Length: 422
Ligand code: AMP
Ligand code: GLY
Image 1: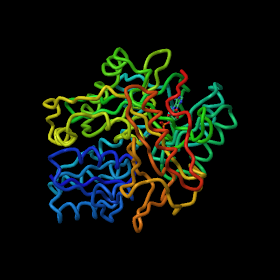
Image 2: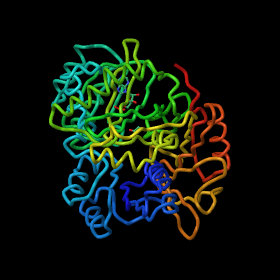
Image 3: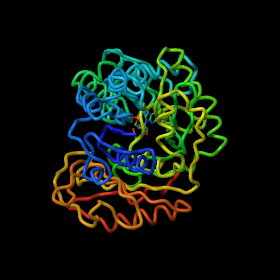
Image 4: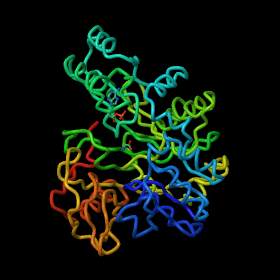
């Protein structure tokens, strides 16, 4: 098969690497890809949001399947366009991707179908939202922009002033643009967070192994929220009993709810869960693989990923037996100095071999470019250094040993990935 992966981050590098293990892959392209991906697949200069460009390339190059990895092209209908051109796609269509693209949609879906989530109210003007927050008078309280906001649209306000500021900046200053036309004001939940990605064709849903993200920029969960600074899989808080409860109360009901709404979901459905004292609840849905969850989940996949994604596209997922390795995986993200704020690009990365790798780990490239055989930084999250081990300790020590061998000016990474407190 000829496969085109759309996207250019660490998640896409992990997808490309796993696809390359398949004997069924004859040729792999990635649009636009990055420096590390260019060592594994042919990168094509088409932006991830360029729907016409992707469809044209797929037709001209007789692509058999387009794997759309990031949220915005999914929400914008890239899968719809690829399928309309008669080409298979992995990922939800726009009608189903709304489960991530609109928090108002996802909250209303959960309420309608009794899927456990934080209590909430929706507002389309700041005056009513602020009046509600004042009357409710319980803190912390969570304020969320309705639409996509690069993972930054959630504000946990510790007091009235912070909540009021959040409402103003989202709804009036429009810091997230039209994503802030509506907001969700939500009850604050506590408990360990778990990410569970699932393959689904709309009829069958198969959860992948669990993972844990570390979203804050600094050790001890301090600093700003980021796209994710590191991950481990499995998540130590998620056992078989919890998996069964989540399947019965959250995963299967969500798939069925989308079918009842006439928005069958196929692709990867991501459940962001919080294991609260009152049971597991949904914090968010994503319509795609997580980043950097993918970097620890896919390395553990033993089944041919091509068989799975074709089955998701064809509606035959129940025929595939999906197997996982018992090993633990850990990923440490090396970020540019300043991230998630402003940062410099174009800094040379030292310690990588000519394939962008180091011994003892797999280096998934996120924000890198390759020029004249050298790698340079080109984004906030630069590398996701992943290792597998018989247990968490071994995976972490291998991942950190590899991180120590890589350097670039200003690099920062968390030293406490996988060191989990309840
Ligand atoms: P989201 O973008 O929806 O994943 O939210 C980002 C982060 O905010 C989550 O990973 C949680 O840590 C936190 N968060 C979101 N909603 C809540 C909530 N209702 N209660 C507590 N924390 C939350
Ligand atoms: N790591 C969180 C996400 O992909 O949304």
